[in-house]
Image (tube, rainbow, N blue to C red; front, top):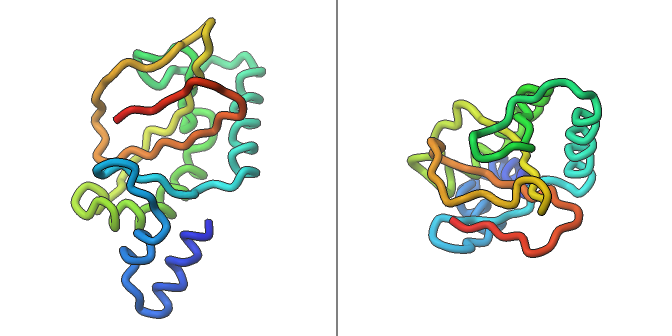
Length: 148
């Protein structure tokens, strides 16, 4: 949120937005960035919504063929909210990925869960995304990792 507010201020002052964004992100590896995005409260609210949906017993289509316990957020009433989030981070995508991030025209937003008795992880794969945003919503976990 603070990064997005800085972008608004940069726009008012005529500052290059890419320079502002690059001050907020950490390049973890070549073209792999991390940055603060959601507040803890926002993460908790999203987790609560997913947990609530899971208690309804309503059917849920899984996000891909590799996850048996994930949920597609667009299909449980969160598409509009996540479209707003996508619009909010579009300047970040454009600054970090000038070609691929130029136009974010859709999103396939989902959550996955990994547990020893369920899905244990995700094998190496490729997908059809020009830009990917991963958000860690985990509350308690150990031995987790993300490899690109």
